[in-house]
Image 1 (cartoon, rainbow, N blue to C red):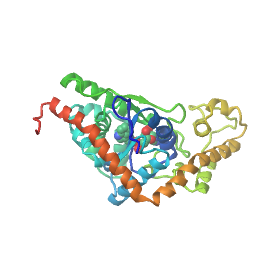
Image 2 (image 1 turned 90 degrees about the vertical axis):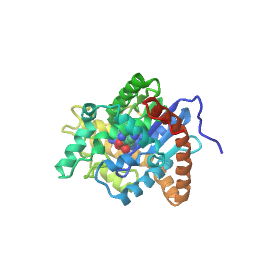
Image 3 (image 1 turned 90 degrees about the horizontal axis):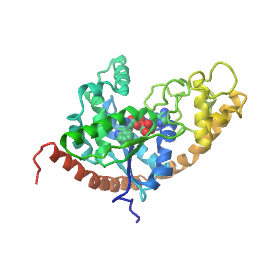
Length: 340
Ligand code: TYM
């Protein structure tokens, strides 16, 4: 069996959080690129970051189900365990081990400045719930996910940019305080669809954990449901098709999605339409075309859970071997007495 590249290669790490069913935003913003480009050009690791799903109120059985489903979808999207490493975060202890050192590197103030923390904490409070401490420290765990592997590049959607900035800051600070230990990673975003917006509220991100689902296309939605969601997308006042994210966010979002699905250019595509109806129809069909092979492969893989489990088992073993030396080095660097 071919093994993923290791020594000397550029390393890529990215992850997806099992807090809900994966969406078209996850696919176009991240997963598709991991499968088409990243796994072929580097030593790449892709992780279902289940520990991050515990930062908000959660149902244990649902997290377990969604973790398996997310892993199955990563493979269905084309990640090939012979080319890259696919695993579940909680199967590799090094993430939590290093997270503590990241908490000891970050400051309370910089954690509280994170936009996602502010938004999610406010939403949690509005629901009358309490905000888990782990929601605040989430970026420390995320930094650990990345830094444990000596990652050079992190391919993500635009919404992760601030967390990645913090990760870089923490790596630099740690290295300055305790000696060169971590690679300072760079972030990459896709050229189109780096931020797919909610079809019903095109000023906010299409997010998997929302309560309202009419504006969210899930990767496993039935084709009829996808068609309906796209055809009912909120468009803007006026009727001419132009790509203007400020003034016409609904239409710009449809053009971005269409462009991402057809390898086109959203601005040029705008010139090809003179009605919103035609744009929606073509966008719906383009989305269906992109999702069809993923759904088909998912159905096959879901029928073979023991195969998915074996991929995750081997992936975790490989990941552990990659992370341990660097995390051990970080433990020594901060002054902890080595075990042996
Ligand atoms: P998560 O699970 O929210 O999203 C997974 C990936 O999908 C991208 N994405 C989107 N891209 C474009 N448009 C959208 N509407 C959209 N929604 C999601 C995200 O940018 C991401 O690339 N904190 C991370 C998970 C994480 C992680 C990591 C990522 C934990 N540790 C280490 C990279 C490296 C998150 O919540 O992603």
